Length: 396
Image 1: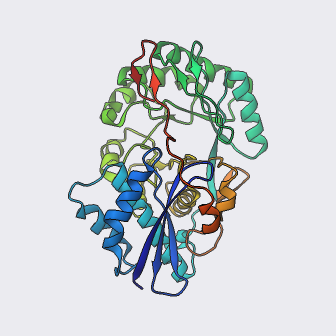
Image 2: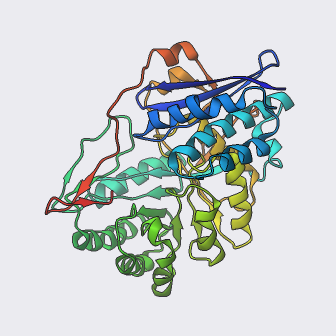
Image 3: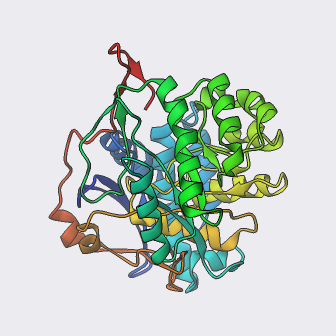
């Protein structure tokens, strides 16, 4: 079963996505992968078309691990977001092919299901605590039990909301002092209004220094957050020792990591409780399962990153891995632009707070190429750039 063609599509059904289709010499046997890197889509597409695809023609599509090692090591300069995202696109497509060839869903190839579905959390962000509480109640009515809470910090302006995206606040100018005051007040108000039952988490988004993160973790501890996400930048990850010394608030990190070696010190030193790697940016399922195996030995749970700026193919991969591993914790869920349903079928579904994938062979996602062609790439779609009050650039 050899690879005969590797096709790369850049499309924008409400959001830019980079898709990979690997075709084999077996009639009708192909696989779909996702290689989306928000704001750098064309760089990944070029890496795939110009450098990676020519290497794959004639290779055995069933040799997933060998292909992963060949592409990862073959660049000599390993890793980085562009190459690891491109590698993820290939890896997901090969797992899709493997499942279709076997007539089994990918989670069955990974050892079979260990649960009925993946516990999901919903973004319930808002302008103030009252709006967030209302959003949490609405999400509870839909079956969710875990919720993310981000609040507008007084004295800031905001980027325009995208109509299709869960409300996420991007306050600017960003200053740490009002932020550090606002977050404990938010959690205090939510616990007073909603009680102890809702599991509530907060994403710092790497904006704090280690000592500031330690202060926030300690201040939030009385309100029992589900976890505090990305309190520091990955370059400062080992400074989580400082945060640990001051609080028992659970910590999550990893959406900016690229491979297992980024995760390794945080896992083995038990500096985090949840690992938040993005399957689309760490080289795919092959790397995700290895990270999960390492984490299991240290009582660290998996909470794969699941933003709307990766395609439904990656979201399906998230749930397939979630279903198969023993140390699954929680899965971020997303709301896609409405146009996505015209292009993709088989998107994971949610019921009673659990994400599920079908038992269809492979990843279970199919792509309508005619619909895909109706949505060409849209240049200039970048993540926000945050600034401080004095005009200087701040980590977003």
